Image (cartoon, rainbow, N blue to C red; front, side):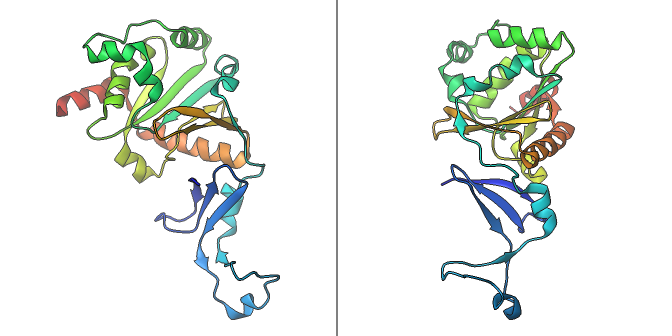
Length: 245
């Protein structure tokens, strides 16, 4: 089963840490093993398979989930949020490529050297409509060095999104690791709703986990603020990439 990093209060990122065991209601806790004999003798109903670790209260108050684990649901279940959000729809993209991009008609045209930034789409129409009312569409994309084929495709198509009002910025994966950003994709709507993506090994979207759990929302907001502060606007980032080729 897949572990998902939730959060840590350790400055160095070693321990203590919380992880979610995906598709279960269980949380894995990393911390220093309890070895104090006086404490161990006071523990109740201990099974041979159990062990005990110490974690600070602040780790649990900041990151421990307050609600049941969300169920995986189709991405289409959140389509209405892209029209109905009140002020900000923010996305973190972490993968080296997406199956949906490779299957799109634009992929072959891009590989043939065509300009794909000016193509119309229902997505761009909605972005233009929402941003015209003052709402914001924003996203940060993690990029490897050198960029993967999928990431170069997104760099080529991004100007079309930017033209209609979407603010897309980029951050190297190495910098993202230094900032300890999440290693999963999500949308954050109005700093209230998190839709976390699930993918298979072929980069195909399996669905989303949607939650309003305060701990999940706080972690997403913290990731957004750190990523947005350090990320580079698309046009500038594309120039940086081009200068290294």
